[in-house]
Amino acid sequence: MRFLFLFSLNNSGTTVICQYLSAQIDGYLPPFGNYEGQMAPSVRELMRKQPWDTKTSYEWDKIHTEWEKLVAESDKEIFIEGSPPNLMRVDAITQEFGTEAKYLFSACSPYQQIASALYNYTDQPLKKRAIKTMTQRWIKRVSQQVEFMRAFGDIPFVNYDDFCADPTVVNRALDLQVVSVDGVEGKQNTKERSIKNMAPRTIPFLSSGELDQISEFLEPHADIVEAIGYGIEKGETLIERCFEKPAMVHAALQRRIVWQSKPPKPEPAETPDA
Image (cartoon, rainbow, N blue to C red; front, side):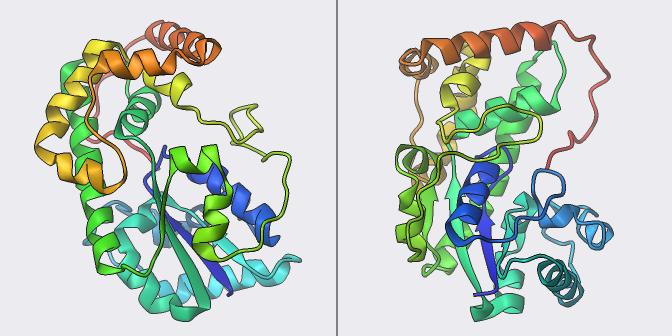
């Protein structure tokens, strides 16, 4: 194995899973962006043009070569790649890297991902239109993920909640020896260093009514939600479950207060994300 790919949507725990994998195999985690190969200077121009458009083709042979150089310059042997837009190109990546790589699918709760995306990529005041846009984006991209999961049935899948409860599910999925780790480095913009389920700090950024709006838009796509191990729930139920971690809920409410204090900006046609 020369490469290890994690295929997962942005704001879904990709950083912590990749950091855990790095510790398990002493792998090379590219120190660009949120530890993403797409942000390496030598390939960024190749990989950041319409990255979420499935019609955008990449020169994978050139990217492959540049990533090989990065591994060769390090003291590692395995390149760990978790750039979220790779989720849209599983077929092309597996064709290019073949048996030289191992692959893993992952996903978190749609409520957690959408709440995180709204916090990171939109501005107040939060309107139903923004919730609809982010939910439709989730549906489109996770539908593509599920399609690939069905087409590549030999690639294992783990969800974020199971990983947080027991990180070794990743080891079992990929047949990796378990190496004990005390924590992870975390994202560059956070001080969180432990493997901890962040849903109670993320989901309550939204009110129960706003979460119900997500459920409204998800309802026609319940099969996609179920395919990644989750279900459509009432906002009140989601909030009540989060209160098992009251300090994290408090942090979520504080994030909402700070977010709402920011001056509003004109709403872009396409909100950027990873």
